[in-house]
Image (tube, rainbow, N blue to C red):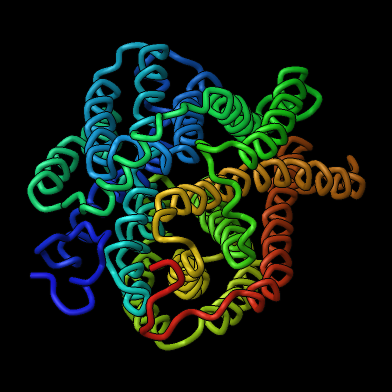
Length: 510
């Protein structure tokens, strides 16, 4: 039963139940959705073969999901207010689960893309709604510990996704990458229906909103779809389509920038905006969004880079490549509760600053990688990096709501999750592009020192060329780790400007 400080929270989704029970229940579907963003990556080649599609065409299986997900994320706060938080959450779980079934039984690429778009629509509203439930169901002094549980869903899921996807694909078939969502989706729907409450305060807010006459921001909807949809396509296809040399990418980039610029101006002056950009005028919230963007940037880009490095240069299969992240996942699980306890006692900036510097150090440590590195050394390097993650994610998640009015938590959650997802997308696109650029650079420099007289012991120029290519790729990964380390150092001073978190007192607006 909810009691004490928990019972005095008018927007809590716990009702008479323990908020920790509600936290576990709503984490099920969000974990499933975040896992889905990485689990399909390693199965892509098998999906392409099963659907008679080329490797390049099959990347739309990933892009289509990310595009629809990116469109729904920023407007999920508004949709939650209009539809009702519990109802909206259950609709999202239902859409995601049913579309997973159709993805698993898709027989052609167009069919798969259609259902991936629908799946992305359902998945886009899950994480923001869950985070809003956490923020409203726990008092400010307890939020850090609550966000430790939330952190497990959005930090650990991407880490185990590649390993799980590789195991399912190799042991069964690519279909199970999607079908595994079904039992978890049904469990989530059942438990949410039985135990999660729609508090009276939220019902009153919804009635007031509808009584004033619901003015649907059609222009805002269109600008969100155009701006974030084109942005995700550009980020996901930038390297494959030859960057700005492609007329397709150049045109979409112009559309993206124009739509997002107009969106900001339009939503500032709109009475019922679908994306409440006015919240970014709160300095602490704007800083939190920036730091969350960097966390997504670092987490998702390195989660893709390390398995890619092991498969491309060390010859690992999908399962072993994914397992290089496993130790890091265990470290994160162990440290999340510790970070939650410390975050409730120490101001966020004094945890964030050393955590960012630790991240920089761990990335700099990765610049010592070479082609003879062992599996154990790779796993240890990843573990060293993610030691800092709980002390980044939990403090910034809690700090995001300092100064946010109580009736704006849905909208704030949508924006903060949007920034994390965008950070991941930008990080992957940035590192993928930089990898190829630096690979070309190093290849040219190394090739300058190779002549036909270097053809020793009958190796042949082809073998020499392969050696040059391998070394150029290795040097490119080292360059990326250096750049990521520098970014971490540059962002670190920003956290010193975060507002102080309340110690046991109610936050502003709560």
